[in-house]
Length: 443
Image (cartoon, rainbow, N blue to C red):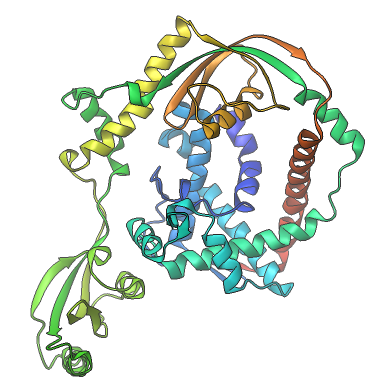
């Protein structure tokens, strides 16, 4: 497996960085992190584009998630180190920066309207079918992000896709190419399955194995970054914000010049404070001992001086037991039960299925059924397990036969996939040239 990943990781990277930013998923699932020896700041500069530690860390998470989804429990932190996934994440982020430079030199721009259209594609930001700004800010805050930073990355991603669209125009497929590959899509599989669902499994929270699982994975359950800080406050009296702000600014100057002392020294978590996203970002990026301008928080103004960054640390088992139990159920118990089912297989027939005609499978949602379809036709083993969301589907392919010619819809899908492959090849060649055009400075 490691050999295969070593050979194919560059291809996987190209596929990921030209796709849409995976916010609700790999970017924040906490599979792991790439530690450059610091927790913030810039890592490199590519042409006019600066790469931050956070950019590389999020790309590492996306790559880790992609491998974990493909290889399941065979892939872990140890394997990630062996294939040097951290280096791949850095190189992938550099590739994205190269493409952004190229897009800007071509004169491509991204409008606020385009960003707005992109934001409404994320279900996590929706309420009653509409984009909700309050939920948007809350979700980003929970994932240690803010709208300004998220939208900056979104704009970069849109720029990259615009470059991709240019090359799409030059990758038309011939009828012969489509016909050859569509033959594969006409294959029908007669299949029996057994669905192992997490909802059917109970976790004993007193089981020592649950705590052992947490011990091995506790780096995934971290506290937020906190800060030791000096704090002074100015209350807003009788709703007079202007007067309170004037008083706070005067106090700010006195504190900055050390003419007055701060009221108290405490630990703060900016994401838990009733302040704006920009103010949260300013605290997170503040240099040590810098006195920040007054920040409005509800019915008061606060003045903050960050003294020390308190790095995230594993939360106590009792604090995350529910979250750990859910992960343990999905990553261990469901897989164990599925393996037992595979060894003593007794399934239910779902008849013959093929890629050309989709039909929902009883016991699976439409989305889960589609995911099963997309994976089953790539499997070479007659028996196996396919993980889909909170389910493991144990399957047995009893026989495979060629069906009729693929439909027009399937031929269109095949053509789109061929386009993607061709664009990937063109993009990889383009990157080789861009590396000679834009200077890459690593800090």
